[in-house]
Length: 311
Ligand SMILES: [Zn+2]
Image (cartoon, rainbow, N blue to C red; front, side):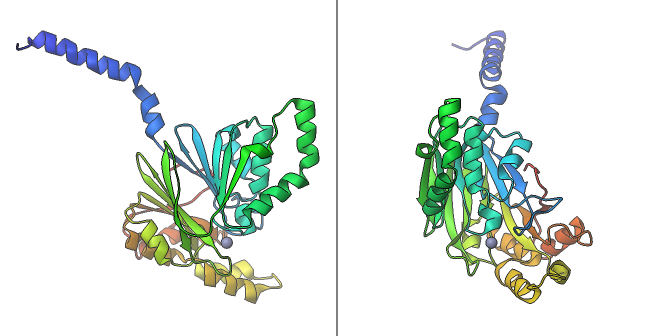
């Protein structure tokens, strides 16, 4: 039986009302992934204007932290991400600019109210590091359990050592895949890809131009890639006693902004985010210089990473 116009309008209106009343921003918020750059400086030396490498992806209120450079817990707080919402922690590789605050993130999240399971993923010796960290802090942990009525920390933390690429995990929010990247002499070193419902995000970790990473990042919406600005490296290492070795090391196992553009182009990504910047805070290297270098080989959007930038 054909519906009258007014009846149809009423039903449409009701449906629209129901959808907007029940889902609204909540459903969108649940599906929408957030990527926040927590630290964008390359290298372990603490800097004034950028924190050490770390980023967080948040989906449906669940936080996935990738790398734990110095200050990662505080950067999460500054980004407005509850520490107790940390569910998974991924390390790309065992360099101190990426792992210095791995244990501290767990400990400080626990003091901030974490009472739920955390899975930690990364290269060996992640198990040993975790165990030693818990031992090193056993006095404080035991004291707070007794004095503040906290639940034990160690049983919350589940460590998974990764030795090869492949699917790392799949849950209700994301599928995470890892690939081996090329960051000698640190082996293994990983890049990670997060496929959420709304988009895909790839974090390169530290690497020189990597065919594995190009494969992992195929068609991704966002590629966060480590980047160096080669003409400025001499200034960066000037004055340090190990300058020749440091320069050779930096140039041999990282990726220039130009090459990051090549990788982004080869992978067909939409947006390239330059991060883990080397040098991290040279006033003579402007954002435009980074962008121009990467754009020489890539015609998508290029973003120069900044701490607490959300994408
Ligand atoms: Zn590294």
